Image (cartoon, rainbow, N blue to C red; front, side, top):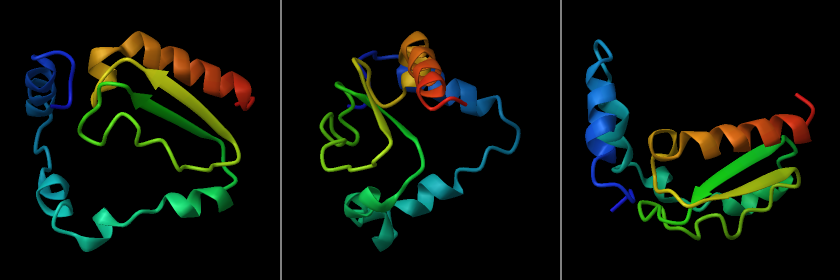
Length: 107
């Protein structure tokens, strides 16, 4: 559902298993929080910090068009062909996006 590769979440589980005392509390509780389901996109227009918005065209966990409606004034919108876990699926493109962001905003 959230990846274009069948083994992505197995790799993510493997990486998490390597972290001593990995804390699953957030993931176990967040979905039951009413605030989690709020639409905060209308607030983005007033946020002045530079933002890299990296989204995947095959990310069906949040939807490939989840970026629509965000209005950050200082936005680098980066389209990726990946899913929900780009740091495993497409590290090279994510690195390219970060470098472009750093260069654009002179960090």
